[in-house]
Image 1 (cartoon, rainbow, N blue to C red):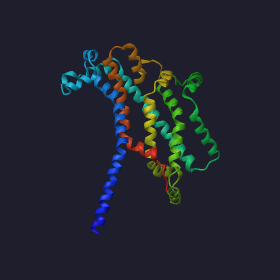
Image 2 (tube, rainbow, N blue to C red):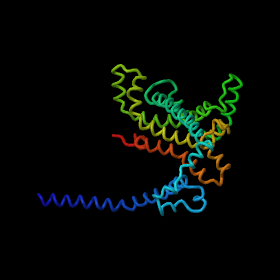
Image 3 (cartoon, helix red, strand yellow):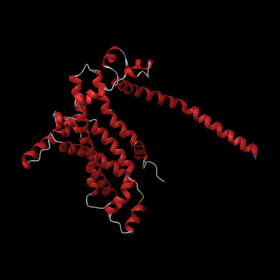
Image 4 (cartoon, rainbow, N blue to C red):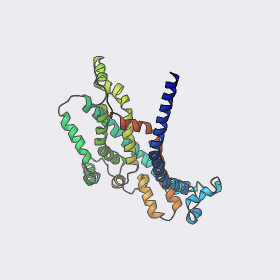
Length: 304
């Protein structure tokens, strides 16, 4: 018996070694691609902390000759771009645009997806097909009609949407809702029917069932869409320029960075620090919600 056990352990060990070596080329390839993809961001980060004279005379990789020599780094670039060049105010404006533009469509889409998945009402299939069909409407094609609608609303009832944050919130909500409803519906429709039936037997209303059961179970897919929507709105330039214009008081980070490229095209210390300032918050959001992102993408792919 002991010899059989030893042979079994050896066989299992050999299988693990074969698996490791068979997967080694794939892992090495992934690591190389990740490094190549990350190098520009590393160079951007290092350049944003270097002195302007050093940037003009040497490459960013020269800091690795004496990486712990603190005199070659400075935070004045960030002080200048935040305070003097307006990136600080633009950063706050981007937060004012992005947070409501993420929360509003998620809130509406969660209720709509639950209704499409578990409630019976007239025209449910028709309205769902309409929602899915709206996903193919190009963003660029809808900008001019939407801008014209904003102007007409201002003329008719005196509510100004063009040039205000409310107009951008509504625009991003409209463009993001179809995808949000589709993603949340695909997840909520796979929830076990026994949970819903037990809730109904216990006398729970549809609203109570949604708030107490469906919503907590749907956190992964909600977080997944929140990442998509946050990155889309934060990195958006077109919608912000169309509906906010070039008003300095309401400029977002992408518009301000685009203006800096024209105003300070030769000042790499300003451009790199401004560019990394626009990147830091999306990176934090992505890594903070990464586990929910993976669960949301893989949820419902395997049943049984």
